Image 1 (cartoon, rainbow, N blue to C red):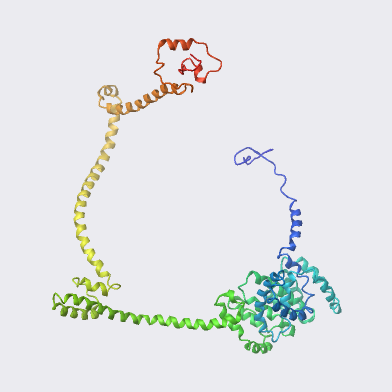
Image 2: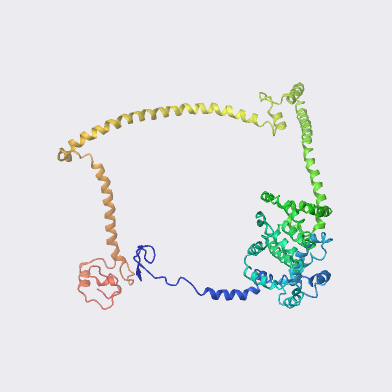
Length: 534
């Protein structure tokens, strides 16, 4: 225990404090060992292990992917035989639909896009593919052994993907004098591939695997999928032509990326733009972004839905034709009025001619507010338009009633104004009189006590409070019979308070165990007939 100079104690107000010596918990290191056991089950830690494997699995998997596509289509029909493999194939079906968009562009990239399909399968079978990686290392020893040194750098940077790009910039500064190009880390990796053409093709596939992890979180972003397709074309030594397409797609979102001064190197790469004009299927994907993004997997069915949306636009034009139908409804109202004329033909035939003349004038003017006599005819015609005329009739009647009520209220307001004027005058006079009366009361207090007999009314109110106190005293007298023993079951009439019984009870010897502790007191004798205390 130590006295704290801050004045704080155990809580917020004492003088003493406990010493807190153990601020560093060493038990957290044991918890990290438990997390290593859980890394086999967690998907986030499996991604770090795949970074080491990306360089070794590229050449042999291209041939096997073509064969596995045929097997997956056959297993969908034979679901009854193998139930354990169905759960793994359902996750792969979602990935195949995203790659069907790439198959339309595979006419020029045929084998390079198929490598992405098996990288998703490596998440489940990690231990079996490690043996295949050792066979690929023998083929890479022909040129340089510097690849083993790069593996050690990537193990330190598993947590941060951006730090790998910064170390590669130092090698590129010897050739590039422009420092504005350092902001684009993805394009500087492409320049290293010109020197080591065969070895850096495998490094491009590592970048593609990192982008697949982002797609699982942000499934709505299609622009990142196009970047993966363009990196495969970089193996043809024409790498800067694909960068122009990425700039056009990023200008829609970010206008700050227009400061890229690499236009001199792009003049030779305009030949690949003609090839992309043949791929007009990218324009159809932009129309699908306006639709539901969950239906991206079914491309063939969305083309049929575009024809259905054109039919819905024709239905909106039919709603404009409904305004012409409102003119036909006015003609139908004239037929209903003719039925009411037949009822009046039995009484008077001269009124028919007067009603027809007034109907023709209403169509031209439409603003006749003075015709209030024919309420039955106007209600059927002007249900929607001339409701304002009916409200004006009610307002005129209410104004006449309010005038009569205001005359009575004005008389009351005049009385209140007179009282307020008198109070303002009295307040000034009372302040002067109070000062004079206080000086006189100090001398005449002894004489006024005899004269103030009129103030007995206030004393009567105090007597009412004293009566309440007398009632409380009566309750104290009633409490001793409540304290009697439970043996008493007879009323008091059998033992009415005679003096002899009271003397006998007081002088009688008390037993060791009375029926109740109240029986011991001589002031409160027990009156139970069967009690031993007498």
